[in-house]
Image 1 (cartoon, chains in turn yellow, blue):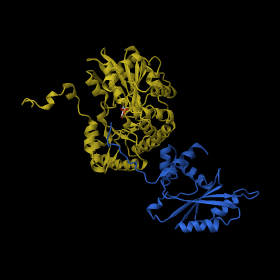
Image 2: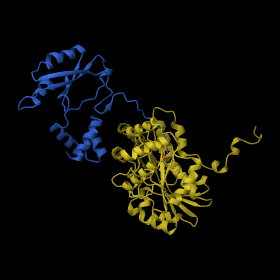
Image 3: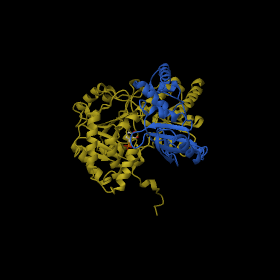
Image 4: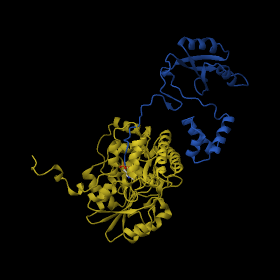
Length: 396
Length: 163
Ligand SMILES: Cc1ncc(COP(=O)(O)O)c(C=O)c1O
């Protein structure tokens, strides 16, 4: 029996209570259970995990591989990741102590922040960005400092806006390129001034490169591959996007052995190890899955062209996304806010997209549309959005 | 075959009803280029026909398909081609492949009844001079055809909104 004047929520930690409700969650509730809509709000591949990967997992289960693994993950998988990162992105990590297998990139982000942040530290976060960085920062007692990025810069992080937010308390910079939600990327040249600032201000970088494989017309440049940045950078990645393996919950972090050891310390008590069957599948994906991955990337690229063109033809400004599988068109010409736009669009034309303001600073006035959908659904969705835009643009 | 044509073919194989304009957008090309490539490939018989993949068992399941392994003695000077032609000219013959291995031609025949297929084998096929032997197998169920799973149960299980 509770004391009469207390409610259950009074028992919850103020830190957790202080986390604002997720904008995505709110929209999720609006669409949940509806079968009649086309959703461009899905943040995962429309491919099912390639069959050879699924089959390898089933086989490993048949062989009785159902035990715990080493805390850091199966050595064979860590070796495969190390070889893969070297081949794809010229990264050099020692499998035995610089690679940690996690439960999705999500856990890796959490571990990195928990291992690095103490109360009062400022964590620099270019926005609009993936929704987990700022809440986790709050949970670990850090202060999230947003850095707005702009469509006019293709949502790249510029040295000027970064420099503006750096203080004596700045400790960590979180990077997410290719970006969810904007599709923005950073080139070698774009990174150079950022590298200088990171060095000058002695920052540690958490680089969420989960979309690294999904770049179009140019290769991803890992921040850790920039001169002098390897030791300062924790690369976070995973299998979800590149190999269409979201539900497997398999990711990893790579970095300096001392940082990885600190993360492993937390991981061993909270998680013990990532699921062994997912790890077995991961080995198969990395050893035999690169061709299939290329095929999926080519298919995203085709659909990317389709949606960008579609948005531009209906009169919306849409910067060209060079990575991930999202388009991030501006809807400012309709005079609606992001939330009004997405809610009315859902109501009137049964298309779901995610309002840009759910992704932090600079997201208002934009909507995130995933093109990980079939061509016919995309065409239908574009047609409906076109009608919708037409209706509202005419009103003023 | 250049890479561009190859990509056009892949997109058409996925969906033969795709319009040139859509293909052009998907490939980041001009519609004219796509139209021209398609016309050329039609002319060269690279694109032979635009035919739907039909799951006939949904229409009527009394159709019978037999796969027949045929051993033949090739004709002097003309190899297997003449004899293959004599066989593939029959409209009930759906496919004819020249094979390596234990037999020479693989033939797929469609008939209304088992009897009809058997009749074709005994009266038309076996009576051709160079046919040495035949072995007939009947198809009981088609799971996958031309790379397409006929009864695919992999629906979209994704949540409608995710971060
Ligand atoms: C930028 C970004 N980082 C991390 C994640 C988490 O991915 P995982 O499935 O590996 O936990 C996502 C998933 O949407 C993402 O978009």
